[in-house]
Length: 116
Image (cartoon, rainbow, N blue to C red; front, side, top):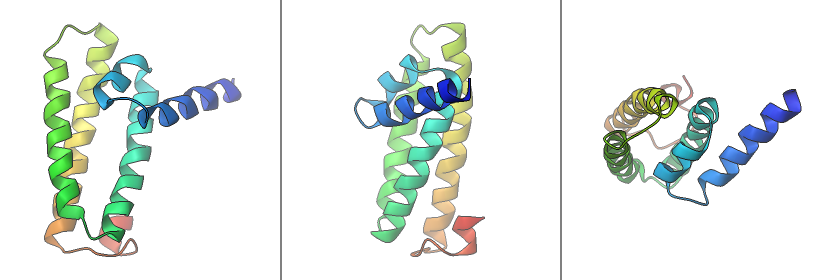
């Protein structure tokens, strides 16, 4: 069972980079979407910090959130709708975290503001 779950999670994380995010969220189970999204968000944030591009990443997150909201306006299954609600909540929080990091001018992956 553990191997099956790991396999599903790994497939969803790997697939994220291959397709549009709105397509990706509709073809994977809710937990895989929520987990995979956080895995990629963490990697992308650390890349943005290292490249000193957090402000650009904040703008990208805002755009991504708008696209996800557009997806909710389409006809979704009940499970997809539940997943989208949870994902949007997490995405809003993630965007707010990045906004705070930009305001604090975080430029290293080790400060408390990021690792907490």
